[in-house]
Image (tube, rainbow, N blue to C red; front, side, top):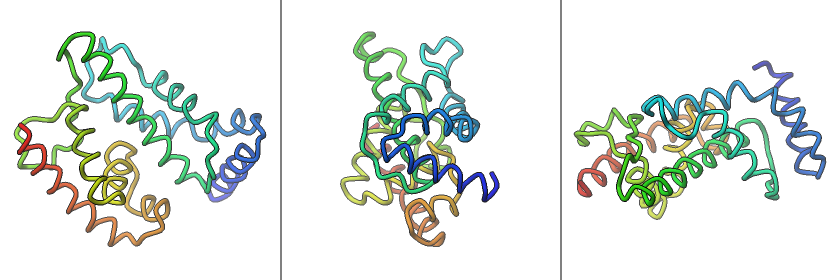
Length: 188
């Protein structure tokens, strides 16, 4: 995305924040490819018969954000919020399915393959619980995990979104991987 496009996205986000719903209609085509990449990453480990598809995930996440009064800052902030909201949608969906099937086909998340201490990939509900536990200890570290693994954001994008250095992103992410691995291993 060019700098001009990023500026346009920021302008549209501010317009949407200021109560102009038509700005969202103009915004979505500009960011949809990035949102689709985030959603597709979420579905890499899903079975073909999953009842929620990437397009539905994006739509549900947008619907959850439409009526919220969010002080949109820029494209990175928007993508960060969408990433977090998509994660919530998937977790809520997994919980509903789990309740329906009593422990049935909870989604296996393979995005933490670098966690050597976890022998099998955790399902999304276990991962959500682990991230919530990390958030109770350090909110920023949990946010970095979400943005990097769920959102697919690069270190420099996370750095901008959270107003921290790339070195801090790297350090926090390394700590978080180890912490989550230990947490999940203890729970299994």
